[in-house]
Length: 359
Image (cartoon, rainbow, N blue to C red; front, side):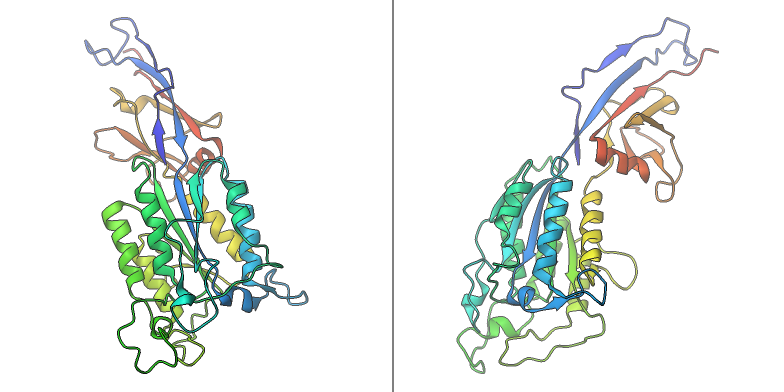
């Protein structure tokens, strides 16, 4: 998230000489508002055949009918984009595209060169319109995740780099559709594209993060951490341990989780909803450059949503705010815990530069 005080109307109230403990230096008082600028977020979504072919216990209730993975993804994307419509500029990229065919070959790996939905403000309706409802969706093809991320990344690179940019990759399998090197042992033209893991994906997301400052969040759908290698055969299933491969992508993308499971691994629709909600909350930076550096940094007051938040010592465990550089210069603050969550809901905060009491 970026901030702007261009329209905040900064006001300055200068105390009388001698009223400040800073001696001859006049500390001044300022009150101003910082407005949150919604981040630009590309949803890169798996619409391969397995998303419609495979079912799961979507509501985590054994007695109810299973639903397709695509059914759950449709519901969750609808919910998240609607809930964060004013707070996040969403776009959508699908892999493969709707033109993909159900075959062993290159036609299973088609991806549009530009996103199906370009990033824009208040874009929930457009994103939902681009999703086929589960009862009419005709999903086919392989898992060309690298091409999908590349198209989404190219789009983000063309946007204002002063606004935070993110990729959210949601998939139920390991990336394939890489460049084929040897088709002589394949049963069909281009089949090697589907039977080899595409190790270009972690390289691509690492470059996006390291070179462009664009992180990638990884969400797995129904990924078995104990499956190991999947066999290669005429079905074109990629030879890869999906759990291990998605762990690698999550680490490369700069938003890995703690522990052995580095990506968000949803085992039902409830967990998928929770993962996307959590990520949507995290894309708010909550690190805010100040309009100028306070002369009395110990007397700064931060208010979000009508509540004054205390300066704290540990942003990882406390609710409030800290200076990003505790030894100065005091030119930015970071909101912590519930204060950060409040900023996501309110979209702005008030900062008051106070003066030390007389004497």
